[in-house]
Length: 275
Image (tube, rainbow, N blue to C red; front, side):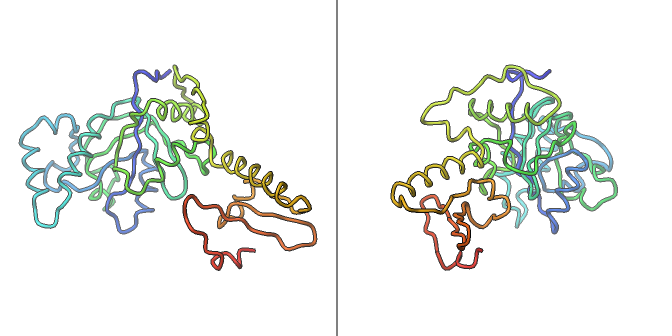
């Protein structure tokens, strides 16, 4: 049994340079790995496993890495150092979550960061990823329902670092609770979140949030238009109509689609043909 007090949670943005990123990410899922890019050509002998914690302590490797980073066209030295430090701090039994194009993946670290150019066997993809961590297995979730909106928002940030630790205690508890709801192994010490008027909406998943918005809108519509006979469908229809949030329906009449934006403009002409 894992203990929440003895583990860290990490958010991974798996984005090494690749001509076919989706295929590469699929291989990472199949191999139960994640990591950071930039091939360290000629740094180590073929097939030799070098752990990152040993590499960082070795000035020879450090000098070689800095020299590579300073070459013309390699503008990633600072970012590389941040990623290296984060990778080096990941420990066995830590929890990792990442979002790829088709699903969310969560796993338990089973091997700390290492370099080995045979992870993908004889594939050219060995040249894409330099430092790798292994997980016992990836648990996949095909939709957003198992994660609260606060975590979804963090994973959807396009400018997020390659690897970042979850420092916020509340987010850590939310992520651990999601892990317990998804995975066979369990984390002890996951306390319930104290909900308040300031944070309850961030603890809900996106479907629950849209149900609340739906109820509010329907109530407001009935107050403003008491003779209205249309019914506002809840968020469950979002799964089959992804271009808009809600739909008003009435038997024998054309449905009315409803688009919701957060402090953004809605361009009606873009949605005229939604139905």
